[in-house]
Amino acid sequence: MHILVINCGSSSVKSEIINTISGDRILEMNIHRILDTPIIECDGEEIHCEKTGHDFVLNKAFPLLLQKIGDITINAIGHRVVHGGQAFDEPVMITNEVKKAIEELNPLAPLHNPINLLGIQIAEQYFTDIPHVAVFDTAFHATLPRRAKTYAIPHTLSQKYNIQRYGFHGTSHEYVAKEAARFLNSNIKDLRIITCHLGNGSSMAAIEYGRSVETSMGMTPLEGLVMGTRSGDIDAGILLYLQQKENLSIKEIDDLLNKKSGLKGISGDTNDMRDIIEKAAQGDDHCRLAIQVFAHRIRKYIGAYSAVMGGVDVIVFTGGIGENSPMVRHRSTQRLDYLGAIINEDKNHDIHLSKDNPIGEFSWNHSKVKLLAIQTDEQLSIARQTEKLIQEDLKVNTIPPIPVAISARHIHLSRETLDQLFGEGYELTVKKPLSQPGQFAANETVQVIGPKNQFETVRILGPVRSKNQLEISRTDEFFLGIDAPIRESGKTENTPGCVLVGPKGKVQIHDGVICAWRHIHMTPQDAEIFGVVDRDIVDVKIQSDERSLVFGNVLIRVSPKYKLEMHIDTDEGNAAEIGKGATGVLYITTDGNAQLTKKKLKTV
Ligand code: AMP
Image (tube, rainbow, N blue to C red; front, side, top):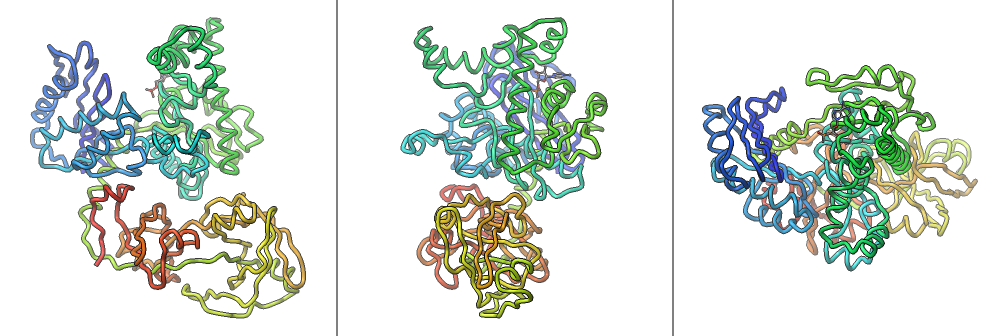
């Protein structure tokens, strides 16, 4: 497909027609200095505008672009929108409702969203007969767990003003994480990746088995790493202190943090890392300090994010600085041997990324953690997300409902643990067969003891497995006093343990306690009907008598052994007030907001 990607920023606009398969650019139009001396560059032509401002310049630029497009077919337009707030957790077809929702998010991104929206509105006047899609910078981080996105301020204020960590650069973090998995011949859902997007704006993300679980930017793009002109993390007390001492207005504090800090503030000179590196080499102490603070903050976050994910498999560097500066990569990743990340200095120096060579590895072969520099391509990612959305929207409506089953807390035991709890060679006895072929609820139960409380009887599900796995709900977790991560079945690495007691013994298991990731079992034939593949993540609307509910982030599990069924835990079942015989309907795509859902529910 050919997708026109429009990235309408406050002082410049970048637009490209991209072939989504090859990534080739068919035509480009760039507009610079819109607010002072606007110049439109398109297909070798350069036009100087007599007036400034987006309205005037875009109304001149889009007709020119249309003329240059001639008879090239464009299938859709993908618009970059910076803030999707809580309303948008994935790309969405633009409608009047969607535009209104983007406008309502203006207070969260006053410098970006109004301009993004203006770009959409003007483009719609010229490109009338093709779909327009919005792709949000925040969407990839919508999976952040509550513990990561909540600020420790009164919850009444957070709720009133939608204050939470949203995160940005999502398109880039997602793109390079997927490229890393592809390069390593792995599935992203098997990897814990830390991505460092280091450019004029910089941020990092912890991507655990395909989902963003932490990111350094917050409600606004000001939090986190040291940036070109932004401070990143700062003690809020400093602002109160400076406000008093210097009698600063809100606008002056805003300017101080967004425009005068970061590399520019510390160096006292420039926000350009190349110049800072050069001056540091000539002995400028402020520039030396700027580099040290910049890299120290990245190292600190690498340690923090490894702790959050219980380890790391890949660390990726991208953005103008991450892609091009061996020195910054070296300073950020040296002495990470304790994590299993061992930098190969020669390879690091030899990396020269280009379109034909967009990925370079700079770890030793024996390094457990892979270190990669990857050229990001946010425009291509926007084009591909746009293409995916419109293809899904064209799909025909032939999908059956999915039965929903509630899994009460239960445990799977290994042969060894069963022997320890019930005696050598003990065989479980069948109380009731389960819907998944070969599985059964056993008559036997165990006592589960956590740091805070205990459950006297937890049902064992058979047959025995290679690893122990205790599946509990969030409510159970707080009752037992265990902090269990959300995991798919079988992924028990770096999870907490507990004590188990059976009739013949007591065992301390060191890992295996999880909150099961809600999931749908299906056969390959079902998967074909639904248009999904194993380990896709989808949204499901539960049709309940009492209270319908949409569950996001549902994992698809495909195997010829499975029977079509969705499994949720007791908390989730209670939330939807699910009775017997409830069914779910797979949303092919959603806006992540019930009010805004305008896409077809594809059901028979
Ligand atoms: P971006 O915002 O991703 O375009 O990145 C811009 C930043 O990348 C600026 O600070 C540039 O100085 C920096 N940069 C570009 N090339 C290099 C390089 N070879 N070495 C160090 N920094 C670079």
